[in-house]
Length: 333
Ligand code: TXA
Ligand code: MG
Image (cartoon, rainbow, N blue to C red; front, side):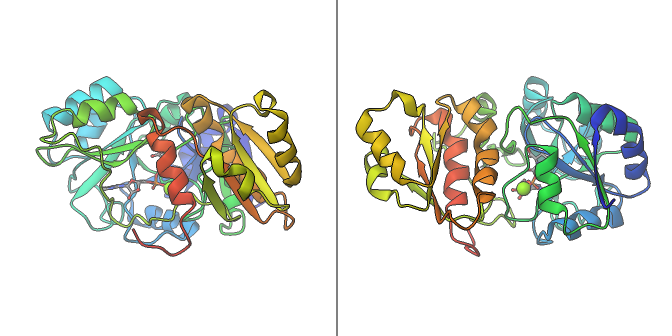
């Protein structure tokens, strides 16, 4: 069997062995599933790029079990890095720091910095401990696709592209979207990718000369990313009725049953609809699974019409993913 999904506790020992021998393993984290390899082994990391079809210009995050291991991967560890790490690790926060010589160039896409995080997931932490090496791990999906939040998503995404792969099944991811990435190499921290670690973002940017929360660009990152196969259209609530066609799969903001009857009549026109939660945490946890569910509904579905959540700061990371997912293929940021 090329792809094996194994209950995480049962598969840990074998997974650690595969990683020590230079292989790749998919494992759960609190954000999304990762595709891991020994970050100190160039050939092992090359297997990740091949399985994902990832451009070699896009650097990979390294996962470690403790702060001492993180410091060992950095040539410089600033006070800002130390204070963010002690406050928010383990957690959905990646810190970009100057890299140590031991980190393979392939991990950093030839750059002088490395992204590091301690994931807040018991299986990921046990795997790191048992493997005894730092693990380079991007999300365990083909490049540009929606990140996987269950073991089955990983199998669906990578199944056709790897000879064999062990997937540790730790159930659905609790956070559901990728970590916040903060570059702490300069005097002023920069948010490269917003995530659900919002307090960390706020703290990191508090010292900025201007309070501009604009996200900066990560090397190699495409504007289109995290995208479902079905075309995605983002609409404000007021434009929703006029946007729905017969083949539309609708992602509603909030519970449909609380809407007036006229709304429900409009929805009846659609192919299907999903009521999304009104809390950003629950919304993030379900978003990618909803995209995948719609992609599996077949050719009758012509588009996804998504009713936008509020424009409040706590929705920033979700808006970021939604706008990337709605960007047309091949668009460079
Ligand atoms: O939540 C996550 O971060 C998940 C789990 C598996 O930990 N990983 C993940 O990895 O999302 P990936 O490779 O799909 O996204 C990594 C992001 C990319 O946007 C990449 O450009 C950026 O982090 N990145 C990695 N290393 C970097 C570096 N040295 N400098 C700037 N950006 C970096
Ligand atoms: Mg990814």
